Image 1: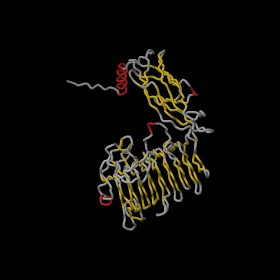
Image 2: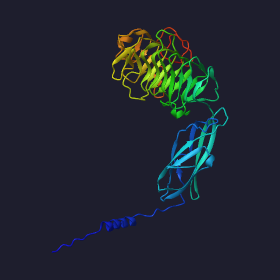
Image 3: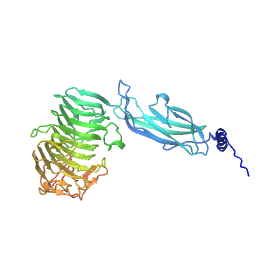
Image 4: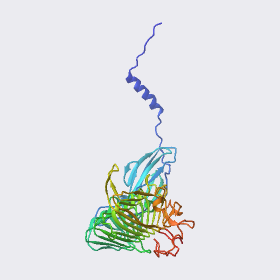
Length: 469
């Protein structure tokens, strides 16, 4: 039997398959009778700083995300419109299309589109945040859905990459100060921040002290410095700004202040051993820092009634020598910002290269009294010492410490080792003491009459920055 071979041109084969597939694809059926569903009924931006006066610069708001669903079984062509139009402070972007009015956007049956919303607010000349409202409408045919847009606009004093004049005083408690790129205190200059002042620092900004800094908060009116998103959701986020730096020759006296959200909360360098402290901290919190709360590089620091907590690597690092005095302080880390390998309370009289080889040493002196050092690691004290220079633990009494490797260094002197201080809530960064804390009533004599918050202490008193009441 003779077999006949049939040859089909690839061109005709391609178009034949395409014709079959086209016959199977239905033309989309559209309806004008579907009410779109927003995933929420309102968007609130909390607090946003208003436009900088005499400039076109707007602080960037966070971007809010929501979805809009087509609940019907048919396609729709939807129109979106911000009620305020071009004059509205709100900007939207829907599936990559930006504008305050977007027309005939096709949405498949039972499908959703994503809406991104940002806000830029004009100055309002008020001393308190002012509510600014608008609406976003989504319409299919005669069916309309509405979303409320709301933000609080807050006027501010703006400081952009500025060398502050001598004897600058920030004392406006009604309007915050916003630092952009940096604020510098020149040598032989004085900068004073009065009680109750609020400061917000943008990304890549810091306070750099080459002269004298005075921060004069009180228990009733504390000073605060944090990242420039003044909303509750970001208050525990690290790395929002660089932090504070006290350069060689500079000094800082800081009382009743809260310094948060930095990369390094405060760092000071190169002060001669035995000199008066270049940084004096009283009743101050430094918290939620990406790398460290407090660093001294051959520094001279005195701190009392202070909390240093929740940092990526160190609550405190005394590096390459220095002179440090801590009384009634709490050092704690439960943040998990990084997977740190060692303890968060670090002391070293050494300088090493990237391979760990010793380059140089300088003397280190430390007094640690009535203080807590605790965290989630087995060992929370990290020490690197060389016999080439003195490493002097001048006083270490009445402390509660988490340590396994440095037991011999801290045994005795009424120190309590490896007993949980029972903080109120490490998850929420609350380092008050609970009633069953091992730190309560362990110090027989009263050295500081008030605690971090200005509350009274009575003998016998408690270890750490907070007195249990």
